[in-house]
Length: 216
Ligand code: GAR
Image (cartoon, rainbow, N blue to C red):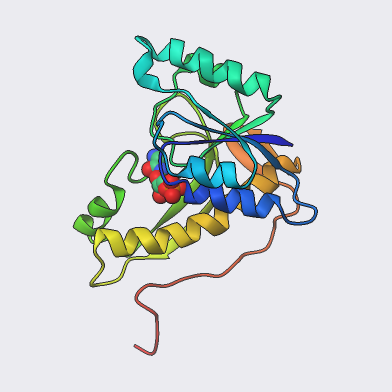
């Protein structure tokens, strides 16, 4: 499935998707990387990987919808079928989301619906929760919302700073996003009542307890 990745910065999740797409039998092909930030360092990686890149600088538009129209044109020109947001820090309106309904994925560094928005790791540490994680979901117009495809739980440790925790969560992101994209691109997902059903996934995976449980 022809897939575009939208970024705003370093694009490490985009890199994970590109690397996965280069493995045998992977069902998505990354055909375009688009950034709203002209200086996004992820663009260099994409160019080195011989993937076509575009910059659509949101500052050059008065209205969000006009920015989105150009984004849409670039995606159509590249014959894109699926869009992955990977650290793309612009909110997309109904105008864009309705045109790509059920064809936009996003990754967010928390266990949604908890900790939507920015500064997730700082807020997680402030609240003293034992687990955080990452979520890959289909995009709806409201920020960080939409049917959830895949989540990974990541423990929060006693001495974590936001940076240390961000690094641990990012490792999980790099595992989960390629997996979620492969589920969608291979047609294994369907959305029923705004929930994602996945063909052939019935087993319970690992159960984590934090702090580790032992004899009482
Ligand atoms: C990632 O942690 C991603 O989950 C987050 O931005 C980072 C981008 O890193 N996205 C959001 O916060 C979106 N709400 P990357 O550019 O190295 O992939």
